[in-house]
Image 1 (cartoon, rainbow, N blue to C red):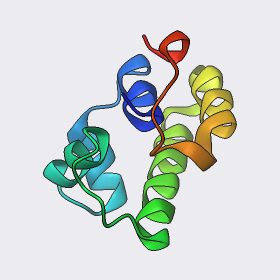
Image 2 (tube, rainbow, N blue to C red; image 1 turned 180 degrees about the vertical axis):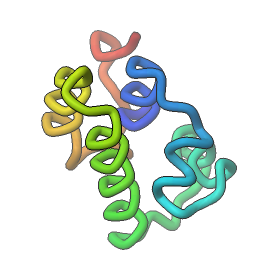
Image 3 (tube, rainbow, N blue to C red; image 1 turned 90 degrees about the vertical axis):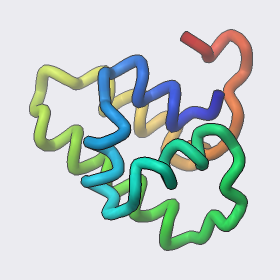
Amino acid sequence: MNHMRRLRLVYGISLAELAQAAGVSQQRISEIELNTFHQRTNELKERIELAFQHIINARGKENQRLAQDFQRNRKRLFELCERTDNI
């Protein structure tokens, strides 16, 4: 599991919500999470980071933990989590 999927699952962000905010397909998000999409450009990474920021802003202050967790993990969203980082 990568950090992007962990954040999405822990904080109840659907594939559809993240994909729409990033302007990519749900399939693309799923492929990234499953580590089967290997054309990870800086543009794609920036789009996903901006999508998380958009979701955080839209959800407001009730998701302070999501904002903090995202900030800790934003540079390694596509990297695999350690076992202790998993849900």
